Length: 451
Image (cartoon, rainbow, N blue to C red; front, side):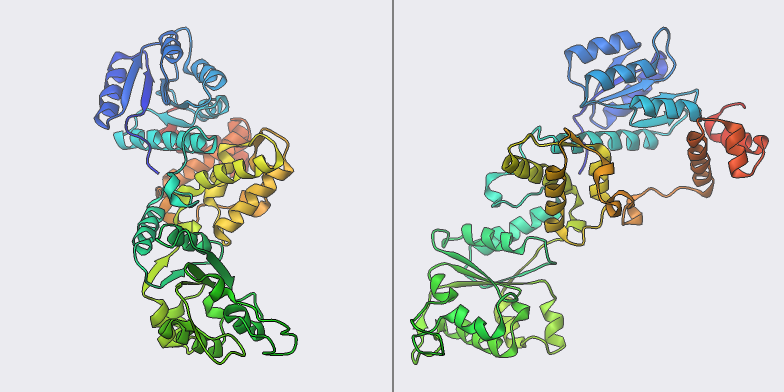
């Protein structure tokens, strides 16, 4: 998800040269920039014009940047804030964050550091807007598939192409990714949309019953068959049948299914004559059928019959940009069932959702949101309400974090220790087992402060 380049940014600095540089740099990236040389003028701008992001200097005459941050946080929830200052200190950073600043940039900073901070702040705002349902989520022709990420867009394009043909479709994907939803999209986007769609979970039906359930049986075919009964294939005649988890079929059933695909006929258990069917077959598997074929666990000829058009459903790990959309969708869904207002999710909670690995994919996320909506009566869901496994995760891909030098990592750690003791340098030096002079020397290149 990329922050919109037409976002409105209010820049506040009492130094004309600094204000001019910020304006020119941000405008070069196609942001819409409004400038103010003091807090009073900035407040007037906020009153008359919607602003996505405020970038404010710390020390200014009469009213400081901290006061502006407090004003924004109390009056403009949807506006993000970045504080910049030439008087950088750990205490100042802690104070700015407490007031509600999303980013803290000590001067001097590079253009890249500025652009990165702006991008992060606007992405945070975008996530908040999505979760709070401030704009439409999806087009009506996605058949319930939620998401705007590149993997989902690619999958929707595949669904559209598959819907235009009559070919057999094989849908692959981990459990919980939404393979049945994809199969329904293929069916309802096709010329068979008015006919039945019949999903069958092959793994949930005992092997001895699967044949009679799929193909039906005639009266007297076996003990207890007191009347003839149609199977799932006859029920789906004219429409589509989904053979979910087709990899669970026994070798004997695989032979029978292969014959149906070849002859376009089914023979009811106990019958002597086969009957023609007009049906489209969609199969799905949570395992790699090609690998199963190589191991002898699945018939190669059946695999080739099923694998005419293949759609691979991405895991939630591959489409994390859609998590905010999914949170909003499921929150509205379950809140409506309970007759309550959908709760808001804090930024930290959304971030924890995005950092979690989701081994159960969308199904697991849906269950997590349902549990939170049921169990909370608060207007806002905080990170403390999440299961411990979700609260204490870090981004799964190291490449998603910027690499820092060893010195930067050391300084960041010292900052954390200082913040934990309220800026008490003597106590921090004691915890770090260094003297105050060493602490000062390690902070001075970054903070530019004296101790």
